[in-house]
Length: 88
Image 1 (tube, helix red, strand yellow):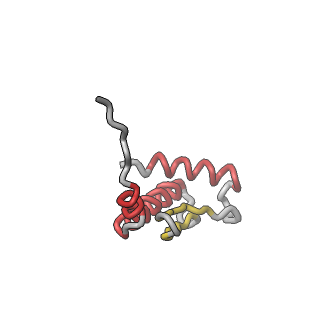
Image 2 (cartoon, rainbow, N blue to C red):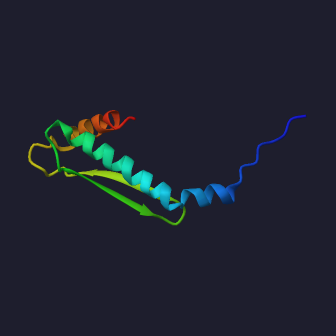
């Protein structure tokens, strides 16, 4: 007999709003920002985390106007390096 999987949506939704999940998302975003800035661009990345209506979200934001940032291509390169460098 095959049983169909039914996720517990109430528990999943509760988990997505848990403060510990928010703290982990902040930590990961900060790790990515730190790794992205390690190529001589320290301080041009900032992080943001917020609890939305349904879940926590986090972002790493680059300053495209920062001198020496390399504009859009440089930010993309540095953010990709940050993703690679933030692995655990």
